Length: 385
Image (cartoon, rainbow, N blue to C red; front, side, top):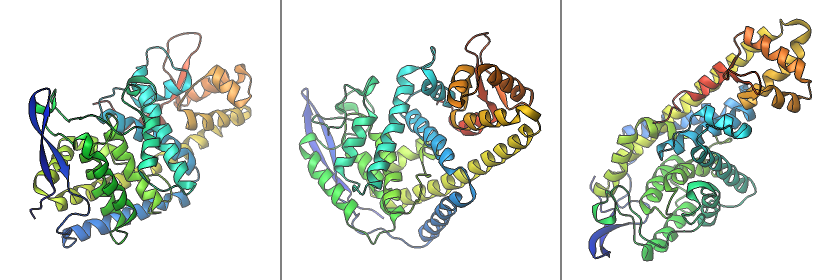
């Protein structure tokens, strides 16, 4: 279906003429055709979310899974924007800012985690998903590092663009700054109205609209992906923040950008929604599979540790710490577990013998040990682009 989704406004920058895009307010007109295959896709996606919500009932350490899964999402979302950190880099950064870890990249990922947690906490306190909350989250997302000079927490006051070196040769130019608040006011109004729309459909529409408005100088992609999870949590579709589409968008990167542009050019919202719902289904299924793999790993390793005799209790405590940290050293483990360093050293040696941990340094002091299979499972799909 062809729709008029917005209008192009003739602008001038440094003597060069270009066209900036002003999107029409949501919802699309004429309305979405929620029928046929789209209805089936919505039903399958909703069932997958139901299974995802049910994880809290059978996964005894849902908090621990969330703790690491949010870190994987932060890493993936930042990788889409070009950072080169790995999951192990992030764990090392959070440990002690180990020399050799790409600091700017890992700081951006760490900021993402803090920004998501802030947004979730505000929602738990009853604060609405709103422009004000998005600005608060953005301020945390861009604090320090490379984003500090890009007006953290402030809507842009100048023209930005996507692709190219200037607006005149850009792939896409968002609304001019003098029309920005007009777009954002309509965006916020849509968040708080149109409650009859299925929440997943609403999330799909809002994500495109946010990326099209591009209201900040930097961080729009990361915040636009966070917006999906925040909306699903606010609307109680998700009981825990367990759905993140960054891996799907990363794996389907070319198609993702093509779909966004297709909506702007032709108004084909139905194709975008179909793509989005396929991502929800795939992502929810992957999250459940990852949780099951981790649970199986933990149980198998606990059974092997139980056979270690007198040192088993200390080794079990160390195993629990490794589930949280992924990587540790003797000093950190001793301090956090209140176990003397000699015992920790003996435990790490026994866990090495069992193939549970692997030393990743070749030095006598400050040796680092990784919970190998655990980090491999969480790193699946999280390799830098």
